[in-house]
Length: 555
Image 1 (cartoon, one colour):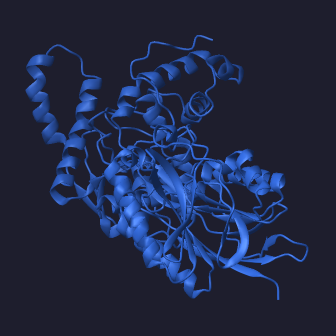
Image 2 (cartoon, helix red, strand yellow; image 1 turned 180 degrees about the vertical axis):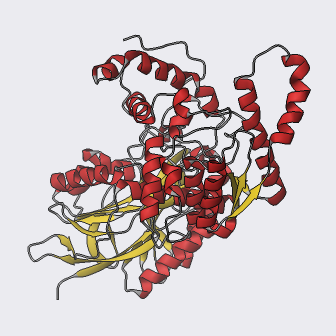
């Protein structure tokens, strides 16, 4: 009979600091693996604490409690398969990002992460000590000698080479790899490089779920020794996968092909990320309901759809806050969105409060022509009224500005920027339109909103307007969004110079104007609500710029 080994992958969603809840998830996965005949159950990087912990892991009491929870988990999972799980290790005055192997009620092996990422959203050099090069390990149940590069270690060929040279027969990589558009293709490229270099099959186990602005998309996979995908889990969903390994006739171990879940196109993955990000941010913060200002525009319509899909329509309160500049079309469109989604729609007019503020300021503003001040008063009154409702009903206020607006400051601080979370924060305006059209045409089991065309096509097709003055259009103040977004993506994601963007065919004066707006709005973004990271340069940890900055690119 050929030698076999069953490995259960637990692609699960932890919460930072919820040791008991995370341990309970780990025990449930371990029990399911035991019942399925597993020899080992594996969970992702830093699962017991949740990830990323940021500076929380630097508190000695936090690490003390985490290690105590790890010891208790080892005792509770004594009679059954081995358990691999991530958690911090404090040892000899140093702190490590570690992956623990628990077996027989004891800690059998501890692997310390060697390469600490210090780019994008990661700052692990600030938190942890680099561990030594890891060694392969074997379990009492037999099976292959595993090598387990912890997340970033798999992105460097030296760790995999050391493990191969030490006798590893299969690479099992526990990860906390955050989502951004097209990240899976990059992971596969890196994993296939390690397979080609070592000749070993590789199993890539990733976390799933939202933590602050970061989303972990799962999509765990297994590659055979030729780099072919032989099993893969669904993105953005918790689940278990039982992988069977068998000793090959000519030596070494191979992965028995399993189920390969489909991996959706980018627009669906972005939408799912926004839904899961909102659901987890609220659920892990203790909120169950939201409200938002529904203007009849495309941005608030998309936020309402995301919220209904994340929480259910009954948990979403939409509020129409009309002024003298609100068109009948906008009113009808707001009513249409709320009705199609099945969300509550309340109305609070702002003309009375606006008149009161105008009267109060009249002595000081006498002789000055109306302008941006009066426009911002309307936006800030709406923010004030929405926050009052949030306070009264315990519903988190969602803000609705897209990445294009956040980039150039086309948003009112303490006005339409008020709120606790922004699902569109990393979605450019042109992608907002695409996401609306995609949602109208598709429904998925993970959506809690209705299976229907939930955003009236007119909302998507009409010219965008803030409706803060007569006949206002966004393009009165900004370039067309197709042009604006193309320039912004080159400035932000591409880090291109003005000269490079002009060489690509853009008007220099427009590029310089957009550059000035981008740098000038940094202070607003420092005060903006968090939102799900979808790109390589989301506004926060990905892109850290000074608020005071006199430099401009004169190339």
